[in-house]
Length: 298
Image (cartoon, rainbow, N blue to C red; front, side, top):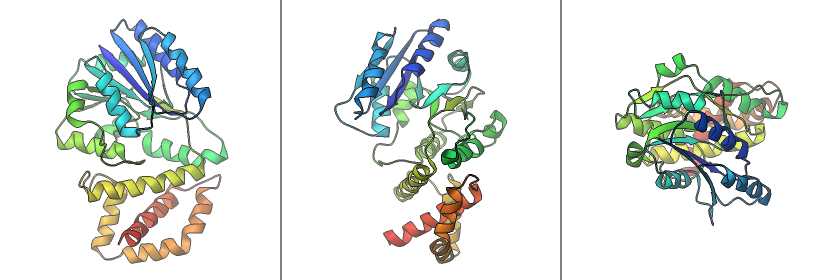
């Protein structure tokens, strides 16, 4: 038995739900597909998604007010009736016609959490190059790569978890904002010694941000990361950029990074918005931004 849970906001998820519903029917499993809309502002998407209610075992509901990324996922879990929860982001799509069957097969094995991986479609648009390159090189890992660091390679964009286990962990509602929810959730799994099973069954991430939007989201994510760290929600070893930041801080070298960032910020941004962005330059930009946050918050 499985509850498939999808939060959405100003996004059409009908085709995603239709595909999952057909796969669940073919798998001959007891299932439900619950979609919660986080108070979308675009009526077009509300109308399109309302068709979900015409599909067997599927439900689409709209919240009166926006409650955010963590709360809406926790609310979906509360509404779920079955013992396994499959969380999927709205802008994802199964990579194969056996996507549900492969997850169901994994439920019979050891592990309270199952993660199938993330993949990206081919994208040639210049305006999306940075997000696409980051996704392909940093998030889209083979099963063998993920098994080397199972908790650090975990991403909440698409994963399954036993409901009784999720109720002990849940998504952190105390810290709002975008970014590093994956790292915090993975850290909680590891800290509580909850077994994480990796399988080869990726979800495809479809909706990429423009270079400009991704840079802005990365800034928000770094602000969130610092809040997580200061609140003790994550340790200094879990996220690579935080580990580097703390090492530089210990060596009293953050002032060098801040100076470099002040001088080179515009040049770095020029590269990141170019047809061939460098992830090395992106790391330098993020490290500089994170180091500058310390100055602002001091």
